[in-house]
Length: 121
Image (tube, rainbow, N blue to C red; front, side, top):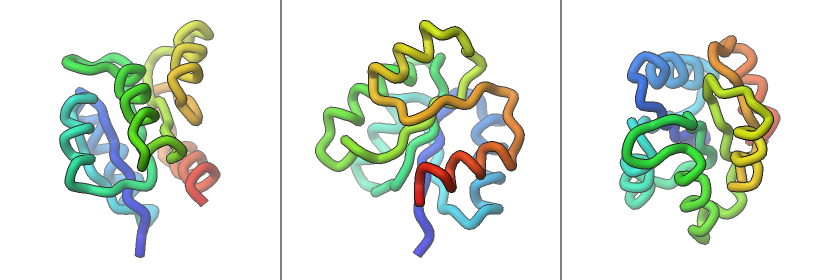
């Protein structure tokens, strides 16, 4: 059974690129446009990993990570920030919230797959 990854980004084109890349590598993919929608999807779906943007409407990536880390089933799953932000302060906030790793956009598809394989297996 393939592992399922939730990708969360307010940009439809980024979600499509991430989903296409991950599906091509054999993963199942769920998509959400923001943190709020991500939490709704997780009520009825089990995922093995989350890849989230930082800056989104309704609920940003940092808040989403904090919420996930407070949920019993999501305390320890890998959560990767995929964002245009590269400042050390933002990375520190992500790490403090519980992010497993950080990828800066634009990303290379093989870089994304390599990170996913590293943290998911």
